[in-house]
Length: 163
Image 1 (tube, rainbow, N blue to C red):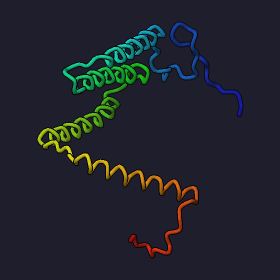
Image 2: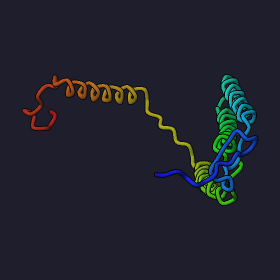
Image 3: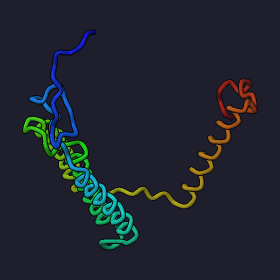
Image 4: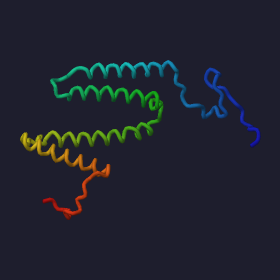
């Protein structure tokens, strides 16, 4: 490769140079803006931790979840707008970003609509049934450990059937 015939040009305040000043470097974001966004992200993280210590809305946790999701959405927006430079992108790029979010919102809305009309069924086994299920689960767990350790008794003489 030989010497390039392109002329180097200075951009902005003269501290940046480029071979192709017409294309340039896009937009240059001041460090002060990055610091402000970073500070906002830190503050929102502190608010998230602080809010999580309190029960908002009467003990079911639904409002806590809503507040946490709102704060997370704001933080995600700050990251995409400023750190990922979406704030300075073309409308087509915005469309590419917004479309999947729209589809996601439709899926969530469809799920919530279905969830809201369903009857909540909570299985109610008695105390004896719960104990029996725990014994079966504990026995299966112990057999798996014995099988892994190679200490499981030989059951081949039973022919696979339990008496």
